Amino acid sequence: MSTEPSPAPDTSVPTCYRHPGRETYVRCTRCDRYICPDCMREADVGHQCVECVAEGNRDAHRTAPRTAMGARVAASSTPVVTYSLIGACVLVYLFERASREVVFDYMMVGLGLLDGQLVGVAEGEWYRLVTSMFLHQTEGSFGITHILFNMWALWAIGPSLEQVLGRWRYLALYMLSGLGGSVLLYLVSPGEAAVGASGAIFGLFGAFFVIGRRMRAPTGPIVFLLVINLIITFSVPGISWQGHVGGLIVGAALAAAYAYAPKARRLAVHVAAPVLTLVLLGVLVAVKTADLSAQYGL
Image 1 (tube, rainbow, N blue to C red):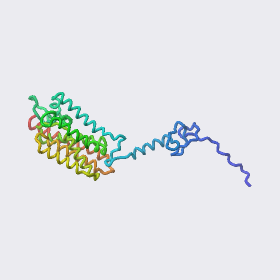
Image 2 (cartoon, one colour):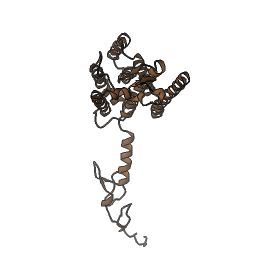
Image 3 (cartoon, one colour):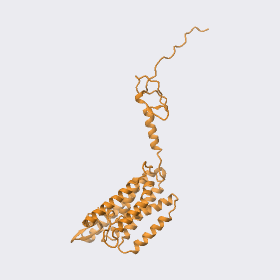
Image 4 (cartoon, rainbow, N blue to C red):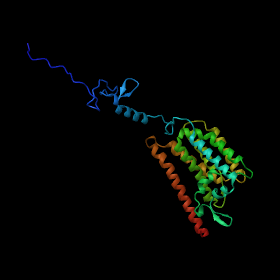
């Protein structure tokens, strides 16, 4: 029989893994390490340490639900961008009603004569390419119906696109579509003036169709609406077909980039597509400006 003494029982007290001087008997339910009250975070069952909570938050962020276009599903379904665009157009319209100078100073015109002075994009007033999409007619054959129709269309289809694309993709598509309409007008008819959000609205029409096709959703209603508006565009005098067609082309092209980007490189494509579109439009404006400068000795 062995006469060796039995090993002494382990009487050491467990301590917090982050604070070795603090005794504790509570374990993290995720990693099983001892944690003191300062390191405890309440969990569905028991407590977790701060590191496990942070890791869990990172996992939740990586697995956040996303739409078919890769946009993170927003906590609120309120179409903030759409409502902001409508509000901006209405506010500018009120300024127009108060002073017609707003229209003359910010409407889209490539090269024109105002009060005996040359004005327009070719004269360095590049901002007209953008500001014109927030202006609308206040007089003439269209009157208030111009802004009413555009804002109705934006309210009708904007929220759905904003939800599926996410806010920044949607805003980029809207602004670049409007810019595309202004640029086509500048390239084809630099002497003509135009105002209105119609180029951006046509861009949304094109995007709605492309994304609907990609998601195998019914596209009949948007095709009908688009065809009717194109007929009106080319049959009613005083409508800038260049603005409508330019917006439609840019909106459809950007939507195609959003919808058909490879999933592995989706974010990179979604960022690159608007940037490259902006660069292309800028180059076209620069080339046209150089041509007009050489032609008229500006």
